[in-house]
Amino acid sequence: MTINFGLQSTLQRKLHVAIIMDGNRRWATNRNLPKSVGHDAGVLAVRRTVWAAPDYGIGTLTLYAFSTENWNRPKHEVAALMRMLRRFLVSHTRDLVRHGIRLTVIGRRDRLPADVVEAVDLVEAETAGGTALHVRVALDYSGRDAILEAARRATGPSDFTADGFSRLLTGLTAEQDVDLMIRTSGEKRLSDFLLWESAYAELFFLDKNWPDFEEGDLAAALRFFYESRRRAGRLPEKTAA
Image: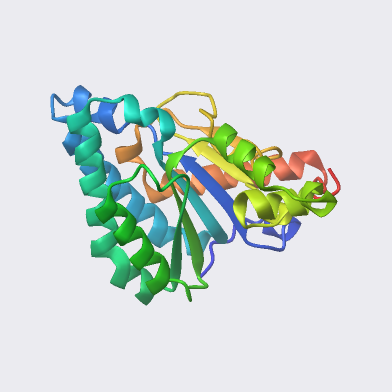
């Protein structure tokens, strides 16, 4: 079942939604709880969002899980985050396969712990056939670094068209750029996330911390997206732009 917002006729393809999942630590601090409890609560919000996404016409969901700057956090917190990420990947592989969800990881892998890389490789292989939703998890990710690396790998004129560079950078075409960017916790900035892919994205900022993000918040963000598109009168031609 796909939710009907009454405005979807303006866009006859599945959406690419990206989320900056901000506020796990703040959520825990506000409750006098360890930071790890906030991250665990954030995992539950990820589950709610992933399972709900296909019903809202979302085809690609990109989640900012760990930025390059996050390595600067206390070592014990980073280690706990890595354990949590591995646990999430291992424990959810079967559910992802059962729901037809493909999961891939973007960002650097050379600095991730070996057991996390092993878990990433396994879940990517096991879920490769999923067609209901493509979940992209950004780990050790920097938008600027990703653009620089793609530029280094460019070899000819075809790599410097919008589609060519998008494929080189993301593995997606320019038509699969981000449609809607959501950020929780009240902050209003992109924080080096998907800078190329979000050139024409609608931006939706929510005061809630990520662990409090519910399906109704996803619905509100999508309603905002479709209403913004209606006011615009027509969709921009991303590839031409």
